[in-house]
Image 1 (tube, one colour):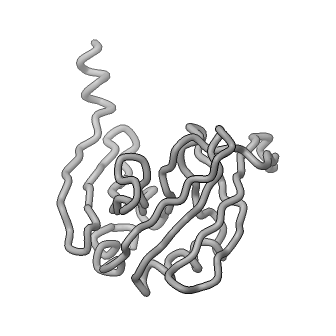
Image 2 (cartoon, rainbow, N blue to C red):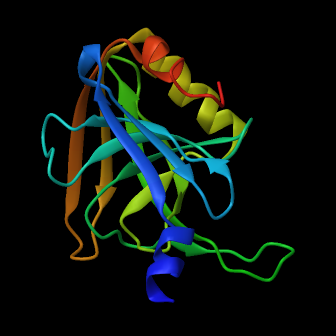
Length: 165
């Protein structure tokens, strides 16, 4: 019985390196029959902790997030469903642009921030497609800021490997 449940919820994964340091990971959720494939880019400053991830959430949906160390929570909010999303304030920018200060949605694990509004996603993808250096500064639960940097190239080619684009 246990083996059957494990088989039922198994995820089929295939990892493929990609030019420009992006890595494509094919991931199909057999339980929900949804494509969960993603591309990832490790941070130059802390590759063991911080990664940019652009992931499919089914056929035409995607998520963009950055993994971090555990985050300080600046705000909680309640949507119509009664759940309480968590937010943290971050600063982020590409190359010599002015830094943007924004409230980003925090993952339940408190170790990732999501670009969740259309405006955030548009700015983020615009910068990724232009390439160059991306940096993001977050505040950890210890009260100290952490800054992660990424050298971004070939984003357009990388996301074209995802079925949701």
